[in-house]
Length: 60
Image (cartoon, rainbow, N blue to C red; front, side, top):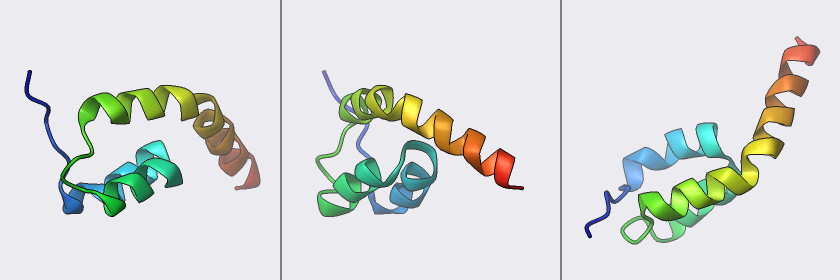
């Protein structure tokens, strides 16, 4: 099964959507960072991301 690979230009979007950790992984090794890993990381970080977004909304 082929993965859709994330190339360097996608790292900024990853940083915004999924968080620092995933973006750093993407930047460290942009050609081996695949969608499956991204989804897994996202699921682990989703609660944290949601909380951060809520905090940002409250700060405004």
